[in-house]
Length: 328
Image (cartoon, rainbow, N blue to C red):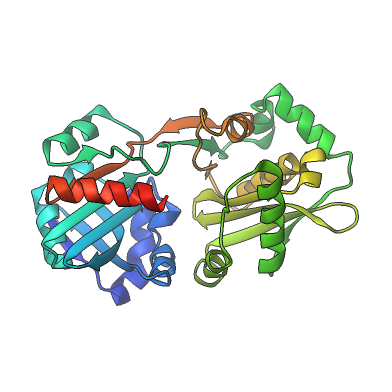
């Protein structure tokens, strides 16, 4: 196989097509996400791997940052395709592209865990990350079936809360021109009510609206007075969809607005041709409420391959994990 670093000009035209072709696509691997992270001071690097016949077998987008001769790379949602492409040839490619003597590379493929892939990574210098940034689990809801079948898959509590929400004259609509201040106000009210850390900064939300506009759709739920009580930001890369943002105000919780909002979003996703909607990360132990909300939709729990790391030395690996823990 042969790895090749893609130029920004070439990638801007073809990259997202590769993701759909290989399957297990992730919004964090799309071209626009890399450009969004460039806005935050990272350098997006994109590689493709082809076999001897010239067939595409794997791709990976990683964001890169270097300091004092040491380079750190992070690939959320990647690589896609054949994990067996991540052998010594790939590691040599990374060294050449970064021109760094000391390298730390962390990957988090959004594909199902398999013993074959795990054994390959372990035998080629990769190891599981001692400090994880994600739970390694998500939930997929299949939408390529009649909607009444999807409704039958709802849990009893979910059905009751959905029915309850329909009593409050709530209105769901696609938000054509999302207002950053209104989004932030909703998040702050939720964070205060639930004693949560800050979920998104103003700069991050502005970056989403600027760089992900071709992929991102916002949906809002208003009460009978026109006040925003819940929102969802969804990313679409046909035929897949993902949750990116979700927030509900204290009033929205009292009226079960999040149930009605997600239900209406799923209907619109199916009408738009989405066949699988990823409700994104879950953590049953640390965040059980979110887990039970998503589970109630009938979505399938998916265990990902998880976070893996490769480094040019043990001290580099230790320093990177310490730095990530400190920044977290």
